[in-house]
Amino acid sequence: MIDMVRSYVLLALTWIRAAAQYPVSMALLLIGSFVVTALDIAAIAVVFVHTGTLGGFTLPEVMFLYGTAGMSFALADLLFGNVDKLSQHVRTGAFDAMLIRPVSPFVQMAVDRFTFQRFGRTAQAATVLGIALTRLHVPWERAWMIPLMVICGVVLFTSLWTLGGALQFLLTDAPEVANAFTYGGGQLTQYPLSVYGSDLVRAVTFIVPLAFVNWQPGLFVLDRPDPLGLPYWLRFLAPVAALTLACLAAFAWRAGLRRYRSTGS
Amino acid sequence: MIELEGVGRSFTVRRKAGRLRRDTHVVHAVRDLSFEVTAGEFVGYLGPNGAGKSTTIKMLTGILSPTTGRIRVAGLDPSRRRTALARRIGVVFGQRTMLWWDLPLKDSFTLIRHLYKVDPVRHRNRLAELCDVLDLGGFLDKPVRQLSLGQRMRGDIAAALLHDPAVLVLDEPTIGLDVVSKAAVRGFLRRLNAERGTTVLLTTHDLGDIERLCRRVMLIDHGSLAFDGTVEELRATAPDETSIEDVVTRLYTRAVQS
Image (cartoon, rainbow over all chains, first blue to last red; front, side, top):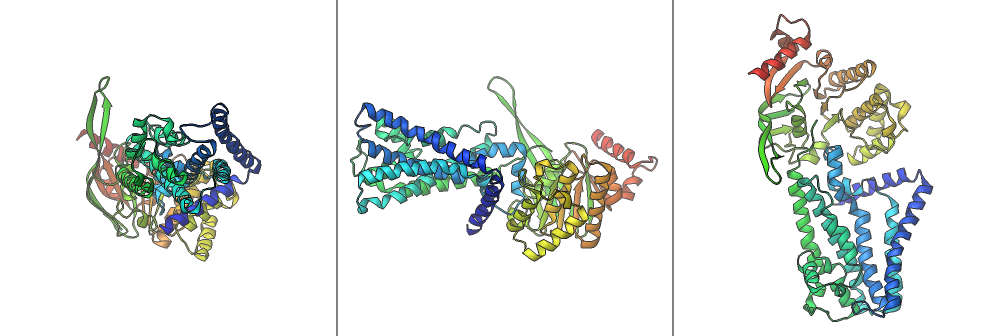
């Protein structure tokens, strides 16, 4: 485990050094990703120009939900978002190269072409979360949940990406299947789940546990009753959901690796 | 150093047979393959396209796991102990680079030192030595993508040997190289085997590699061994043929007919 972190940092530093040879391009990409994601929050602001609440939540509350989900998604994307490029690596043969090095291919894939530009999104989400928190005045007995929920969210999104990657061992021709859950999940969690239909909310609570990224723990932080009347204890279940999905993802990844068939030549 | 016992690898291939129907059939890339390579040997692994050479190499390096049989390389089961094995063997694929495409060669080497946890002093000495004999000095600062094929291949070979492995496995290391680069690579491999006692297994289509380098030749066809012996014994299978090309052509076509 420590070894994996060490290799990750080493590879990341090498990639950053390689990218830093073009500083202007690096800066522009960083600013670009900050601006593009900032448009997201502009869209939410436009909605609130016309209405005081969204799904029963005020603007700072929506910003809080957006910020925590955004942080989780951006951090997971920053650290492990590349894992879903598996089929590309398989096709070019780069995956074979990863397999003959004494480092986990998962780490090598996650860190491949690591760039700072992905920090733009994290910075934007952190800004939104910061603004929301200054206006919400969450007391300490509920605020402890915030870092925990962000970490659980990172684990949940990473697990989804890993599952998507593992799926590509079988379906090398359909790498986009998993995007519905990862990028789709990232978009879905930007709004309070109460704006969606109750069947969808139940599905993302019990099947693909996206509701534990920000919705259930968020209800606890905001001290709100569940609009769907789901049990109160669900709010503390984010670590359980994250761990379960992570185990499932690790298992799928290993199973996929065993079935790996490489390419010709 | 390398032991194979009854090793087989099959692939299930699905083919479109109708709008939705898929026919599945099993392809045996390698079947019931057994051989042993002892420490210090230099072995050539021959076979026509699609005979199972690369599949064997991939099983030896742990990239693919065999469907049946038992493999030991440097005392380890490759598919189960892939990462441990990676520290003990060097692998070169002639068709694709194992280096980082966008990084300067120098950075690739530094990275390899860290990933393989090679002691800095030993690494420096080994790198200087490899730079010298493989003549890498002129392009150490260039990104790998800008290197010529000959330069890249020498870089790849250096990268595979930086951690001083006991076994070196090469899949078509001289493919596409001009005569000068070819001679450089061959000379280097011969000295590596003679001076350091590194066990070398290489696949090739270039019979010049076999004649100039290998004491032992194995020929695989349709997934199983068709010949295993010295180069002289290989020639003796067809005494009336003059060139080694003709001898091997005869072996390939004979194996197809039977």
